[in-house]
Image (cartoon, rainbow, N blue to C red; front, side):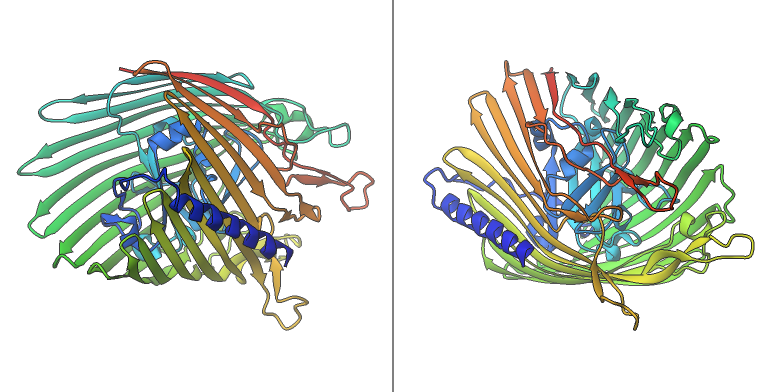
Length: 635
């Protein structure tokens, strides 16, 4: 009751502020240009037409925030929580509507990327300077994208610079970055380039004292990246494109299993993706072909032998759309991708293929909207899955759409689940889900609101359990034995009030483990590391060539598997941008303005007296107050 009452108060405040904004004399006289997205249904649609919870973050918004990485950007959105194991470059967990990282599909330029052993893409080392735009679609999109998209899809579009630019930033923990973009246009080809380098000495990411012997070293990070986006338009052949993005670097970390030598622990990574594509409009039909290749590679060094985990993925996509009338569109496509892993561990299988086909239909007559899609996927060693998405909507007003949807999803077991040496289970089946959502989107001149209530039920969830053998009586292995339920409400609202631009994002998420066994003490119990309430408010004021952005984020307590609760926290940030000249801008950002101490992520326990019970607990250190200043020149 306590949690729900706080959420109700937050919603009431949001709606009260929105009502004032809608009636203010400073209301804008025109709507913003309608935002078109393609991620939700693989079809160009306005956000209203997608009938889904969609957020779009463009380059201008990213630059106004002055943040350092993609995770900083994503956690400004309702329904998204980030738990960090320290500072920049360190491992971090991304929760979308309460579901862990492995249940969100990450695309870069529409290409599936990430580790086939872990089953997800780590965003900690993805360079923010290479990002032009991010489209976030929450709720299952398996009918469009197949495996992994149970919580949603995050499509990161790389830089498509409009000119030449160079930027330099420096800041706390010896942070420094240099980045640049360029664009060249000829009669035959359009070329956009981006490049960047950043480094930081970081800080000691794990708590330490004389009890746990952890080395109080700084855990640094660096990243070098290059990108190319090439387009050629030909009246006869259509549009030909080529995209390539490459990044490499090093992350130092603390390994609490090697207390005295943690300064030696580091991971060197090398990630890239290449996409060659073709698009052609033929009457009412359009055709698009993508051929992509990507790599996700980590080499980890330390007191233990060097380990490598690398995924190479080849992907082929064909997509076609057909406009039957002004009200009805169809699309469909075929997909094949092959994953190959290269690792120092001995897996029984190191490659697999996946084949898929989907078809969708979309209706919009100005009053009623409907979207329907179905998909069939076939994975080597796992079998086939059929998924669907059904959504309907009604235009309550020319600026208000009520939507309802139901969709299914699945996640194929990872290589670690199936074949990890000594513990893999090749008999695993896919995890499955059913997601239901009711939403309302309002978009007035000086007010926009998107509110959604959702429920996502996971079955066949993979969980680890004891599986002793004669050779290893302490062996554990994964099984399809768990169920979970995620339900909640999220609100995103933007409004103008007396010259101030305000954004309020509120989410309430109840993530529950479901135990249907006859001996269960409780059928429902809270899942760890998911905060029930997240509230973020930001206010932006522009005075001529200066804009200032003040934001505050509240996160409620979350269940821990070591201590009773990870406490709640409130953190303030401040950013500013000043345009000295038309081409020259200086920027500054203070993170954790009041140097709040908090636990960002659970660490580990230490048995001091040898009784096999933890006597002390150590957690990851928070990002303390940090200052960054930068200068950018466009030419």
